[in-house]
Image (cartoon, rainbow, N blue to C red; front, side, top):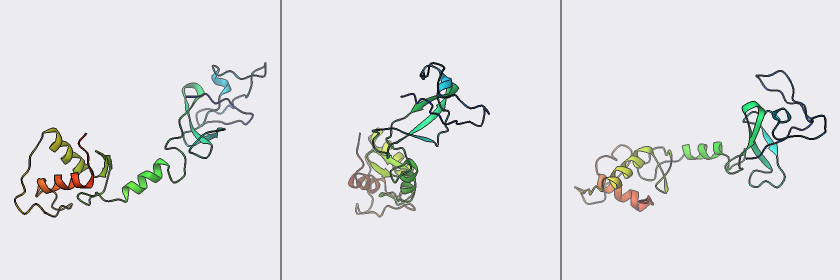
Amino acid sequence: MMYVPHSTEHVGDASSSSSVASTSGSGSTSPSSPTHLRRLSVANTEPMAGSVGSGGHLPTHAIDAGVMVVQSPVGSGSGPNSAAARMQSIESEDCPICEDRVSGYHYGLLTCESCKGFFKRTVQNKKQYQCTADRQCHVDKSNRKRCPHCRFQKCIARGMKVE
């Protein structure tokens, strides 16, 4: 974490009508003095020289008496790699096992909650399923519970990993 000193620009916040001064009488800023730090909302960014991955901007967050925390640029920003963009692309994908809507990466594969839970129970309880047909049952959202053997085999074939 890093403290971000206040520049000459005045920034107010919704809870306070006063502005924050930029320097003390000696002309220097002190990281231990919260009056010399800028208050920003979560949506604001502060340019940082030499930062990687987000076009030179890191997200800043105002906490306790105006102390600012700068978080790492991993997964931040508003570009195509931002968290919002990743979530939007995830929401539009279908589970490779049952074709339901995916919820995230589970056991190494982007899957739905149902397949995540099924795979977890199967592995943790060391279940052995038997197919009552020809071991080539069609698994989709409407019939994913009919043949657990074929569903588990499809999980393995698509890349889910026993951790």
